Length: 150
Image (tube, rainbow, N blue to C red):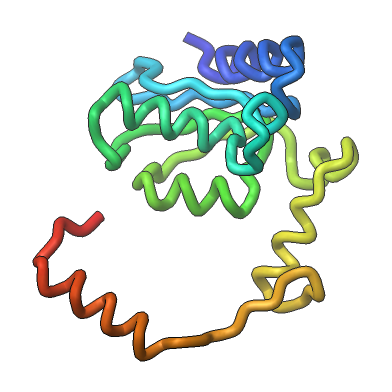
């Protein structure tokens, strides 16, 4: 099966239905598609509904787990910083993409702003520590419950 073709089908479905940008994704395990998604930012009025995030949610639901170790992800464009974070949290270690960040920029998406903000080179984002002690108390309460880590 051509997994990039399936990611493209997802993307075309999304743009045809005006769900969002041209971003489609499939997640594969043991040669089978276990998750699908396309950009639904406009449909859901939610900036986190990128194709990769939607596919991760779908795969996790289908497998009944938050751990997608052993899976591969195929996406129509290089994942943005948020999606790269989601991919790492899901334990996906292989990603195949079509278009580059530069290609994405050419059609009006602003990934470079996010890379600049994460590198401390932006006036767009201001992050400051506050109320650390109270938040450390919260962390202590969490640790006392001996919770499952992910």
